[in-house]
Image 1 (cartoon, helix red, strand yellow):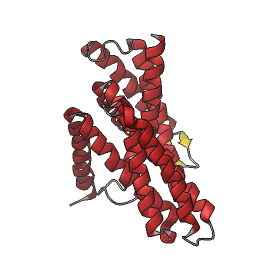
Image 2 (tube, one colour; image 1 turned 45 degrees about the vertical axis):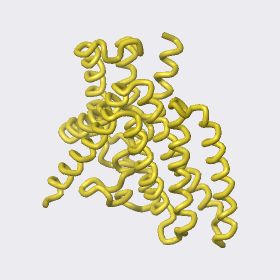
Image 3 (cartoon, one colour; image 1 turned 60 degrees about the vertical axis):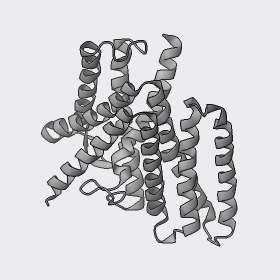
Image 4 (cartoon, helix red, strand yellow; image 1 turned 180 degrees about the vertical axis):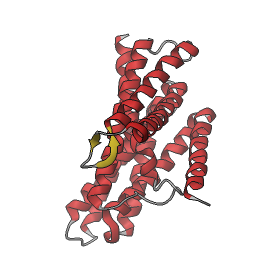
Length: 276
């Protein structure tokens, strides 16, 4: 099977899994977010630690990421009264993680701890917020993913045909300003179209002007998320974050934009609802 066929097949399964989970309800989204958290934190640990990885810290990092994702997800659920207990459990995990580092006998303990906490904030926290966005509005969750995919598609189509001026050559030599504006154009058109074609789907959340603004911000933050992951890989001297997804690389290669767009979406909706 050629690389293009592998990429297509993997992409179909990936998109199908996400759409299926969103349509299936909150529990399915929670399972998906915790799976992404576990895989993402594991991948980040293997990238940053390489041959210095320790089994105890590796297992603890994955468990901590899943616990943080779950704790945040509980904020708007039927178990919201227990949220402080879950968050306290994660704080105990932080203390335990530092204590465990005492007994691993590594000279660069501070570096390992920084990598561990960075994975929690960079990966597990946004994926926890995904559940809050989904609780506020599952159509919004679906639309958020669609905008990210459209931004990638628009950037690729326009960038491959018209790309001349490098967007951030130091980090990602292939990205162009033309591709960036192409992706943003796709997001703006989609934001306007969904409000005209399905005017009731986001009823009571935001007017059309705010949705167009949201499309602009999703495009910008999706690009920043992609660039940050590229910066991490370039710093560590790797091309892909992993090989779990045939033809696409690692899980972080697929959710890099999502990790920035989720917090943006949650903050944007909360602010918009408070002032509209």
